[in-house]
Image (tube, rainbow, N blue to C red; front, side, top):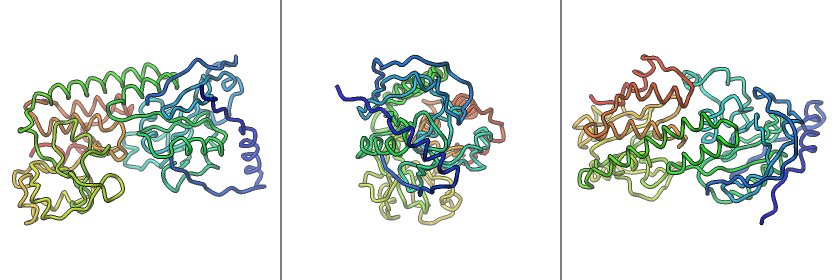
Length: 386
């Protein structure tokens, strides 16, 4: 059995915070990049009760009861039994934790824009931005000052996961764990996160919605002959940056029963490749999806784009976005609503959803938000049938 990873430099981290507060030292920013986890029978220290709210002042009672958690990277980490203060590792983790336990966040990996605050409670605007583990923005100093009980990384496995997680943990003095989550294991990840955070009821509601969506979609998609699957192109920026097939960024197309025409090697960061108009014409997609702030408004009058079946038939759409893109960006739980939206768009006779009602239900459940009719109209303005 592997030796459990126990955080031993918490006193050093706390001392660093005190020195920083006194202005006696200054630390620069540092950066680091980083299946289903199991809770093992734990080393158990007796102690305290769960406190309310996301206080930045650690409770010695809360932190005295710990156990050994085996994360998705196979690391055994000693973590508190009662978790009230969490730091996300990056945007994907941030979205998931907002849907499950937003009041337990002590910081954000990235700031939330004014447009996103239309759908997320503005009270979280007071949270500090800690930075992203997978970009050059992570501030170890900010993580320490926020005093989380645990840092949670969520997503697909990455190269050097174990070393990166260990490094963050050692440098901050905060237990750091990884929970694997992709589309097919999303319900399992939520179950684990619900147990970790004590938010089992909310986790169950989210799991039920996710499981129903995926099982219902799979059953209906399986009834569609391969020869009837629609060819889909997913473009961004200038329209000729295509999102390639077989990545987490485009799996909504696969789940919704479409055929992603961009079967290429990824050449750009984020699962994309540069293509030519000639190549797009050869693929001749029947449906075109475009990200917001790309070229949606102009392709209807473009002679080049007018040569594509999707544009001639009016089957080109702007992907809804708010607070996050329904196809990804980040590729998190927002994709579940994306599956309902896209399957309905591709095969309305099979997936007969009222997307206004679907949107209202999803936002209430996942983003704790009662969307207005005006917001729904804005989200779906360029995203439904003409």
